Length: 115
Image (tube, rainbow, N blue to C red; front, side, top):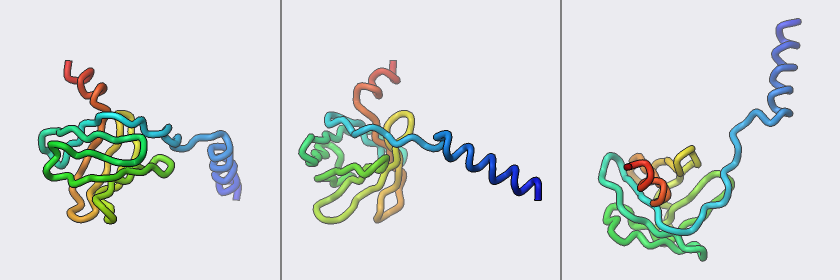
């Protein structure tokens, strides 16, 4: 009984003290490096109006994006292409159709990391 009470007290303390995954801030429109599986990164441009330009990303037919909390959704027309979660470097997730790994990092961060 004491162990259960201690566990519940600790759990409540952690919940109420804010010990949880922090929600990511809003996505900043601009150029991002998109890497699908282990392929070479390509540039994906996210516009402030929710449009996306995949440019040289032949394997990522993304035309729109939207953010809900810490989740970033990339859409191809009316279908969802990928769902990504915020992480320390940007976003990481999977494509819906093929369950392939996908990462999205701000182009400026990618340049800084490579040097």
